[in-house]
Image 1 (tube, rainbow, N blue to C red):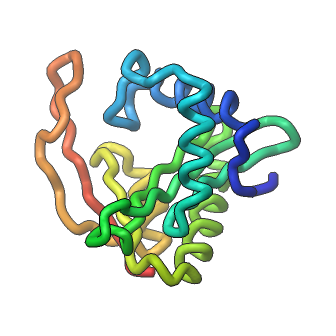
Image 2: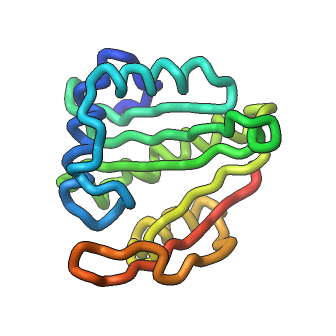
Length: 167
């Protein structure tokens, strides 16, 4: 497995991975049918994050196969430029094999050396205990919880856990 920065020619693979993870309906706020299905938009995101000194877009690949991705999106406003928001997606068939851990390790090493950042934050559903455990192993702490923040189509409410760590 190799971890590298995303390139524009990764856009179709990253879009397909995002669509597959959203189709599971358990891990993200966005539902699959709400995802902008645009190759050009995904290319634009890759370009945008590459140009911002407080942002990073990583992919984990095995040859041509995309295994996972990680985005650190730094704030655009002056008062938020020191904070990067984290998002990690791993292919369902490859979870539990250290891909998320490897992506997160690489991203945090980059963030620790980035003079523009002092904090990495994220939001995760409270029922995603594996992800929460991974974040805690990497030094993230819970900052708060938004109770019953999200409502599913079946009427179930989910809590949102806010976590961060200093870099």
